[in-house]
Image 1 (cartoon, helix red, strand yellow):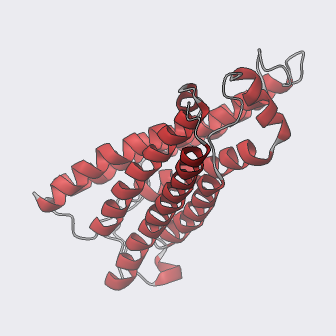
Image 2 (tube, one colour):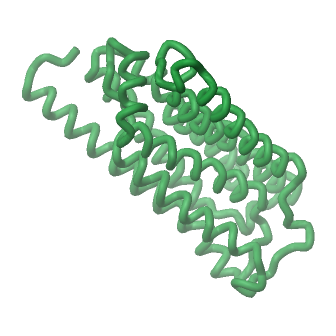
Length: 257
């Protein structure tokens, strides 16, 4: 645990700097692909499964981060489950990033409708059945969790049993699953075409930068609390950073090597 007030102030400032820098890197990365599509007047080269899962994931992530920041119920239940570090490591920059990303995902997804943008869209650029199945399963599982929690004796207010925080964690895990899967169709499409034309490498470079900075902020925030369970208590942010780094390396190899 950091004890010196000067060092503590410096590390807190560093955490905020890392947070907003990763926010900028990840947020700017969302403009690269739709701008490339606009330049080429085409969505060919971009797997539609990617923005489909991205949209679902970031809607869930926006709700999740907002709940951790502003819901007294969720914050109190988090504190009850993590007594050693009762303050969540979710930051406002996490919410700002998630909301902005969700909006940009809507823009990118809309570009597959040629009637809206007049872009060239491939006849096979339709979401796969597997991805549509994931979307449907995510919606149904969320509804089931709501009914399970509402039907408990405590009405979702007992942190030791089924509680509303479990619904928020469910939304977070949906985002994590979307992130784990969304890159795979694009990796396969690049491999199949033996080309990354139509897929923005700038998006990947910024994403890689944001992933490193996000992971660094999470580690610093947990160290400030003197309890590394802050990392486990924010599994979505941890998972997002590591997943992004893993797939970004693959995309960089595909593009440059």
